[in-house]
Amino acid sequence: MKATTLQLIISEKLQAEFEPDILSVIDESFKHADHNPDAAQGGTHFRVKIVSKRFKGVSKVERHRWVYAILHDEMKAGLHALALTTQDSDESTGTLA
Image (cartoon, rainbow, N blue to C red; front, side):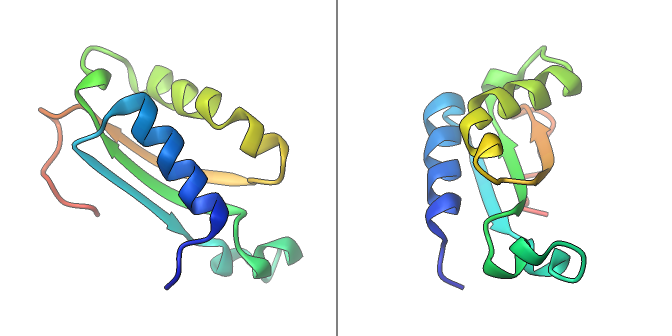
């Protein structure tokens, strides 16, 4: 599946901020098209996994707040939902799931 513009923007911003060991950004908008008409076009719902040493000692809540702060402009512009998995390098199993 071809990456969307928003998917690339999200990836670039998260890469720049967290310098992750693992970064996965998957557009799952199509799963929500039945209850969100905008989702049929993509770019509204994403599943994101970030594994970064920058998360060491940071709570899950603070990690999620940090990601949302980085993507503030995208959220204001129509990004509807993020399913986040945030781990430090020691917590990760090394898989994208």
